[in-house]
Image (tube, rainbow, N blue to C red; front, side):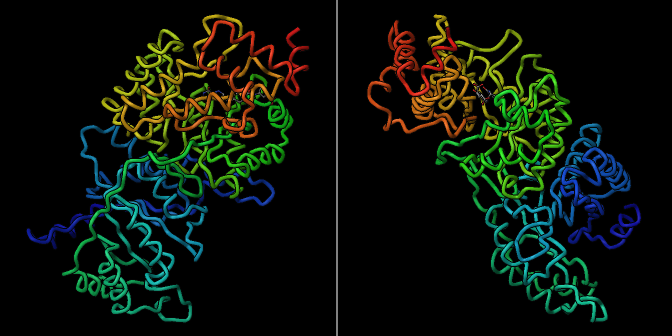
Length: 544
Ligand code: THG
């Protein structure tokens, strides 16, 4: 870095300053793919090892005087996220140093339009945009000609500058230089990119020579830079594919079945280490329409951290599961953090809260950002879990202020969970729980711009455990009203949600009475009616 800096000093002029771009390469190891065909959960390198290596590299580049940091030739987004993590950590530890601008560059290795670890270009962008780079782009691998569709795609979605520096065509071992394109070829292709409005910055990767760079500089000297597109505010998640939640989105179903506390069957599979069966539960969730899957390994008899890691690593090898974003669910921060180190996509942390005070809340929120995740914030503070409307909105408002004003958290990546508790339990204080959740949802939607609202839907019907038809009807009515009030997403059992308009009138009325707390005797009337439903007898026996 020092040598490069000395060279720039020699060639810089006031109208043509020269900068040093310090590159952090991908390393020869991949954090998302198993090196062992017999063990898809195995990894050659851990996130922590990569962070350590990148951190040292950042320190050297910064000490040597680099002006820009370039995380490049990314074939695995998890490696890239480790580099971004190390960079953020480094500058956090060195407040005296000015944060250097960042350039991030992925590499699409074949005509699938995906990077080696399987992400599409938009999914990759969603995974790294939390680092707020100066440029996002593509380099290496394919030459400019084959890169064109991906450069175009990126130029349409990136609300930052786009940088493309291709190889001099595809490698050709028969040619003298190893690549076929001459300076006039590569420069012509890049000029066409500029004319099409794809790029702000260009250069050359493998096979390009100083003559190529000179030719590129010449043809682009008069080119008009790309104008940044207007990209609406939205929650932009990803698995292998992007998943966007905006104001026009329909309700988002988060699959609840991959939860050891929420499913006896899943708990049994994990405890018995039947991971193939456990994966099939995840796959079913996605096949049945879950757009995100919630994963929870909080079980006393389990090494939850190891189980979370193993399951997430296994999911990473299953493209039909890992195409969707992951919701990492644990009451232990250490388990959440271990999970975050396994996912290349932009996931959702479930959850953080102010139950241990603001300081710990801020610490965890900062880390969520550093890992590039959205967060569920539970309506929980030092005094306890919010049960009334007033407490729910008081906590959510306070958390929103702390996150947006102190942490700098993007409001569209905040998901509030104002607590769904069981209704119709026979305890009078519980009767208004659903109403309070629905009203808090509406309040958040109206008062906390861009924030999203979620909840664990199956909680609401806990008192009807064993009576699935009753539970399904309660979920259906509850969601009908909560979604109208602005609920964005819910952790649900997709097999236990019906269509509001299809509910028989009498059932709907009784359910609506309990959900909306419309009459004193609503619970008794619901219990009475529930016993007549299919499966209801079982419920009664259990209650006895
Ligand atoms: N908020 C947030 N996260 C959450 C919850 C929440 N995560 C966990 C939970 N609550 C949501 N998930 C579930 C999963 C299953 C059930 C309820 C909530 C459930 N299971 C049946 C039962 O226990 O009767 C299934 C039994 C079985 O199949 O063995 O009800 O509120 N942020």
